[in-house]
Length: 104
Image (cartoon, rainbow, N blue to C red; front, side):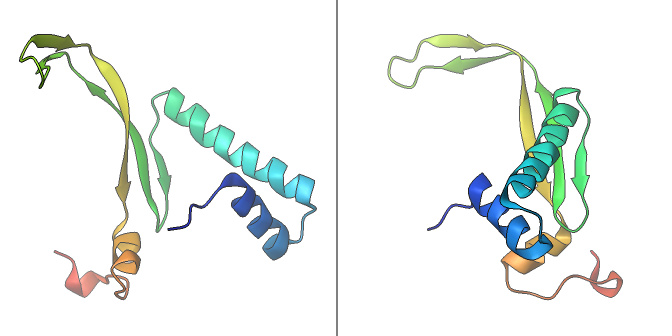
């Protein structure tokens, strides 16, 4: 299993867009910084035909240590979630992109 890295993405920008390697890396960092800043501010980030990143607030709850059975409070926190688009789901499953006739 391969992992897509920042370096791989910057190299793809370099080879497909034609910017220099430094400009490609700077462009990638700029995009990632903008996405991170938006999420940090509580905004959702929607990338068409890919998916939506959003920050959700989780409330406090009681957890249990599975080893000892002792109850432990789990503090409220923010979590990052990702909801893939129908187009991305179809691509992952090797199907054609859904159209309006097949929408459920």
